[in-house]
Image (cartoon, rainbow, N blue to C red; front, side, top):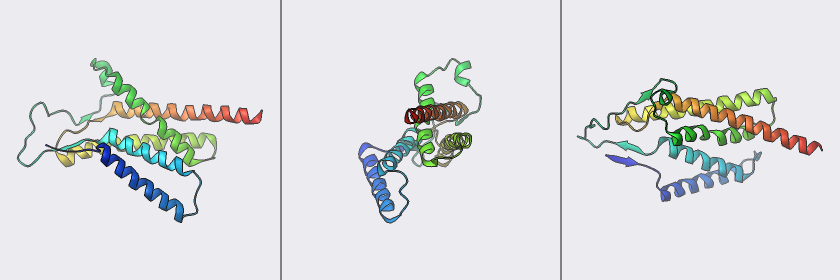
Length: 184
């Protein structure tokens, strides 16, 4: 089996290239709504998100067949399956919940000032779309490699969306607090 992953050196080189491209975009365009550090942190978050959700990718070499231990399901569409089957993995549950909280903050900052109810909904829907993209991406990797790399799991989607909603609410609370302080 051949494995594709972001090793620390590869991760650093890719991030360096991304920072260079961001610098060039910033230098040759006039749109500078967010500081460079914001763009750099957002790029780092997205790269980490990709690393933690899509990698490693295992590809069987020609002639290799799956063993019975490799034959894991590629999809899981039963909501809260882990709860009913006693497969409680707190690391996975907390990880999936926390995964998109920062994304809600980044998206909210990118969208800027709009009507409050619309901005919260747009932020949540963007996060939900990213979560759905992650799950579909995991299934696509399995189909393209014909090897079980990850599971397209409805529970992951539910927990990601719950975390995104928490991020949207938390951002709103922090924003309200900041507005109240500035009015005093």
